[in-house]
Length: 127
Image (cartoon, rainbow, N blue to C red; front, side, top):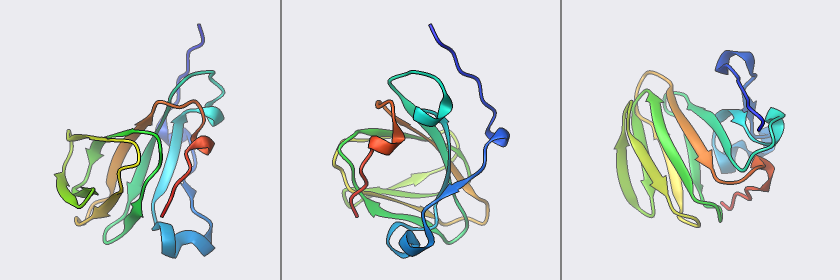
C-alpha cells in the first residue's frame, strides 16, 4: 500500500497557457493527488482557485467530478442550473455535463476537486 501526504502550501499554482486563458478562464490549480503526486492511485484530487471577478469557463469532460467548496463564495453552473456555493458545499458533476465556476465575492473561491482517474492529463477538457 502506498500513501501520500502533501500540504497545499508546498505546491506552486498551475495555470492555462496564456494563449488559452480567453477560452478557458483564469483558474489556477494545485494537484494534490494524481500522476504528478508520485503516488500510484486511481484518483486525482486538487484545489482550484478562482479570484474575484474571474471564472473557469464552461467546459465538459467524460469523467464525473466532485467539487467541495473550501472558502469564498460563487456560483457553479451545471447544465444551465446555477448553484450557489459557499464553504462546506459539495456538488457532484456527472460525466459530460457542461459546467462553469464564477467567483462573485471579494475573497478567492477555493474548491477541492476530485476525479476517479489516476492522471489529470487524461481528463480532456472540451470548451
